Image 1 (cartoon, rainbow, N blue to C red):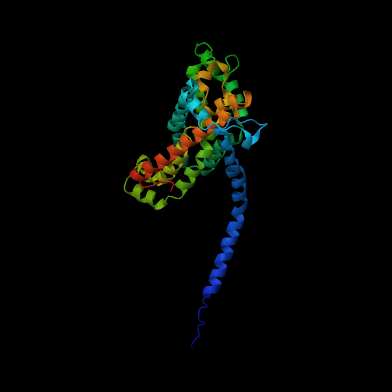
Image 2: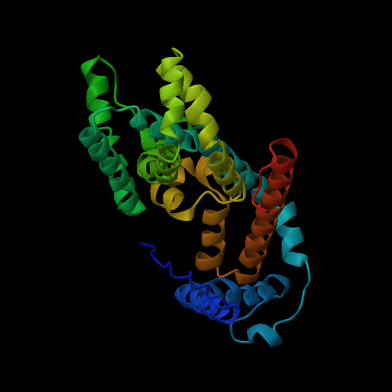
Length: 314
């Protein structure tokens, strides 16, 4: 008995195009709010950069304020405070790059080696929690822990016969405290992408390496780390693009007048000049210089990355 097979129905070219367009429309519709918000809050405010080239007055407005060209840019670059805030910004970013950038990588690798899945999930969840705390709360926690009278750290120092240390007012400790606070707050959240990358590595590679007698350390070195390299390069390039921006909230909530020489960065300097002294044109010019330096850093780092590793942002 022969069974007649129905010929497969092939969609027409016109129908395929219609389905394709419908799918694209749905995707664009989902992205529309993102595009609108990005345009409103990121692109429209760019027009305000014109203030950097004027002696801006709120009473005269954008169009009636006198044009001065690069006067404010030249003033900032020749001012003594420029080198102070730039030096502090670069040093803090360098510490963040060495310790803060590598900490999530190390944490993701170590957490991946935990065999107990329940404990691993709990550890990952706990590491995410500080990310959702504001810097006001985080700075309060560190001030309490490092207090010379009631702080836990100074109490431990007293157990060993030491004297209390005023950590938050000592210049030699401030940068280390600032970087440590950043690591504690963001290590779990920053490791999420690395967890996803590690989860995507083919498990057969580990099985083959184990059969060949490779230790766990060898497997990490030859399998896990190479699998993480593309993500590490991507995040490193993005991080280099913000080398001239430490982050206002972290520094502002933890600094004080006694450590201002070590903690004053571009963002806090702009705050003091702009909001406290109403020097709108100068602070806009400083922000413009900061953005241009970050852009040049990103382009240069991307070019070097493509030349050396073949990977880049574009």
